[in-house]
Length: 465
Image 1 (cartoon, helix red, strand yellow):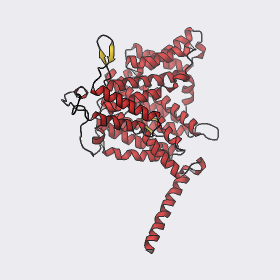
Image 2 (spheres, rainbow, N blue to C red):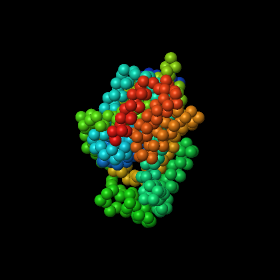
Image 3 (cartoon, rainbow, N blue to C red):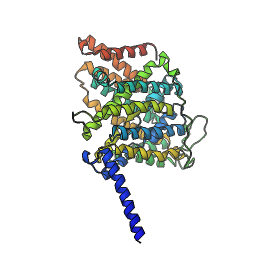
């Protein structure tokens, strides 16, 4: 009995020692938080963003990267990047492969431009190199000042519309039409399942349920089980060469990680001049997504230094940049800070411990690829639609009365889904901004960096890439 009491006291002391060490390293009391609050915030952040474990491999598999390999890459890079954000930048922000960036990778570079996915990974690598240079030499302000914030808002909204279109397409809710290009699909078992999943997910989001998106994926997957078994036919969702009529097929629970996409990146091939515009678009989109997300979260959480600037901005941008290069080596699209980190911040999370715990929670899924491959594209489609909705938020910040900004912002926004190309939407937006400003007699408002960006965009458009 005495030994039991002694052992219990020792365990409690050890726990107290670990807790005290964590509090000291992350300055938890100084940030107005507690160890319990930080741990709960880390769990909330992970639940809000864990949908990427399924959605990112689903999108990358459209580029030819095997789903298990893409899942392995997604989990590893999310673990490393979030751990780096927590330990090095000491901010409560989760980092994982970015939505929008994966769509750019699969649908614009690979499917649209016909680039091999290995070469597309090379473009990601070089964008990460350039991003790292911007972070190391601290030149972000020059670039930020050159491209108007409202044009960036239009680009963000355009990516959101593009992701929404992909969601509707993956659910085969929108299909091709010889007469009208696209049209709504006839209402059948699959369409009803998608609409039910979208409704359930939307309600969970509206009620602000923690982990709403992943719960929506689970619910839609369950609803899809009867298709091809009890009613309907899922054969049109089957991969080429497959005769499957069911949407959800059990393939097991556990499997070893699939490292087949690791180091498949074509670094030298991506240096071809023809691919420079794509490298630039990756750089631009990743840089501004990371910066805007970090600035927004820092403002919301009061994560500022003594000068009132966002806390550890340079370190945070360095993590984003470095892990983008690493992502390409592992076999996935670029990483980004996640706006879903706001879930943990809303729970009171204020330190890097939030990101560290979220990073740890990714690791078990490294061995669950058969289980996660149960999820059909129709189950991730509602999430894509709603992610597009989330990305539309900045539309209200565009000055629609100033046509020198409204026209390029609108073109960037609407041309992404209509051309099925994020690259073309951004390029036309940049070129339109310079042309409209100059012809409206306001050319002095165009900065040197914007002239360079627009010239590169025009070069890409006229060269046919």
